[in-house]
Image (cartoon, rainbow, N blue to C red; front, side, top):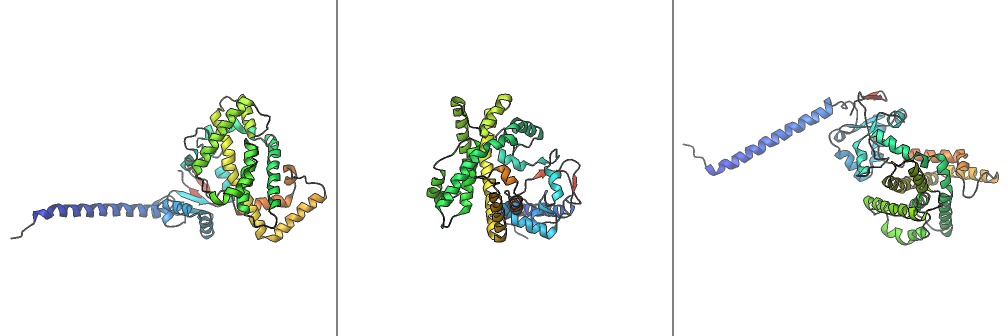
Length: 366
């Protein structure tokens, strides 16, 4: 007659439950993998295996800092459209730029932008509601018209002169142009935006940049700038100012458009420096890098500059209108931006209802 140890019955039950849960989990995972690989609307789009299953693939490459190289390699391998997420594709096709990002596009910003906006109500870059974005843009458009931007040139010239003085003092020395490009960009943007020149800024670089590097947290940097901008706005309302910088333009727009409150002005004032200085520095570094890597093109640019100077067509510092008339300089800048864009990741949009056909491939809605 069989004898059963009753003390083992709970253990057997636990093992059975573990087996059932494991089987259920394995079955669900298998169904998910099969669907993503063979039945998902993007199943026919080529791309990495893991990218079709999980966004951890994007997270990993973003963390590693090699997303730009990875995507270039994938497009070279697979063509203009690559699946880089369970429900996302990367497109490398010139015709797609106007379709996805052009004026009046139906491709709305994805929830990726919400991370940048946070809790701010006024944020042109992060705002996903197209109607609200259009309204916000109309409030500040006059401050960024070309006629207004030309008033900023003297403030940028001040920074150019200080930068050239700093470089002259360091002749015959090894200089980290990457850090100096960052410092120059920040100085130019803060001067044109609202702070004015900070006399000790270039001195501070020599003393503390080797120590602090770029370890300041993004939130701390942005929060500090917003606090500083709010104080400057309040101070200007009390004392007034004859500066024709971006803050003065925003104040002028605010008088005509009551919807543009102080929070909106602070948001734009900080965005000019926070976003503008990084992209300007990256672009400046790219231009310097590619010229140094290709001395024959650097020499050709020098010859164009010398030729324009001999003709008396260049001021010191060079004016915007003068730089615009230099074809080789313009070609160098645009080519550097093409080779090394300031933003190393995609700016995702959501395909509108009905889907869209891009590069001969149908992209479903969502």
